[in-house]
Length: 385
Ligand code: BGC
Image (tube, rainbow, N blue to C red):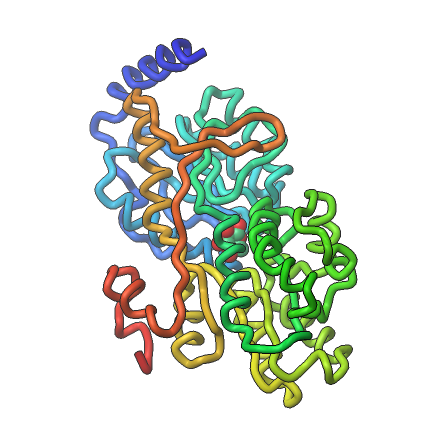
């Protein structure tokens, strides 16, 4: 198997040597990205694109970050690239992949909208001998994924859960509100798995009381949940990664909550977009005296919320590293080298070789050291820092 791969990689490399000559990266120009197509065009001669990048949607702030970081990283690339957005539709995603296939890509980097539904798009690419790299979100139930670059998503959930435990204050019966990501996203399960691992013992011993999920309540004595069990809970507490849905759910929950479920409360919010929406609802309830709320992605708007004391923490996932890892694998493939990986993920169909990056908890006191001093953001992007 390995030999076959190596030989085909060498053939690809030889082929590339012909095709890449004189090829420049059109997406490096920093086009502002109107509509779904954010950059690219590939090299001028014949529209050949080396690496196709498909991101889920511009409606979730996370992926706009990734687009910008890809553009930064691609400025000096020898290879041509094109970034397309799927706008939360698996059909659009498949169409995007087909468009990129028709432009001759050799490597596809794809963050799927729906991890299972994206199998069809990955299989279409594989049929054309394209190397498929799942980016941040795993594509599940298919053999057609070659590599996976990701953050340690279970650690993201653990960090969120641990933050709530560490900042809960004293006493028993502290109300805990749980929110999750989209059930179509494999990561939503990993985040929840990590959070549950840390929170469950505190729920089981009565330190925390679940305030908004009968499904989670039903499993409160179970340390490890199956995917089906997590699916039941997530089905109830999902935000679909959508700020409006998060806000509406939080409003419904607080309207229904009795006074003993208010006061000082804890909120597991899955990411920054949803955290800010949920935080606003909790902040405006006169019966909520204090809330501790999680997030992830270190989005600019959430960093400002953290500085202002409106969001408690975020989990910083340095997208620069993920982009570098994805492009590193892509370039290795194009250069005929075998990419290095650090582990693997079971996608239900195969063990996908993976490269994983650690995450960092950011709260008020380390915003500056983690995000400004590292050059991730400019100090002038924020007020009151
Ligand atoms: C990503 C998160 C992101 C969420 C919503 C997840 O798959 O890992 O960083 O906040 O999707 O876009």
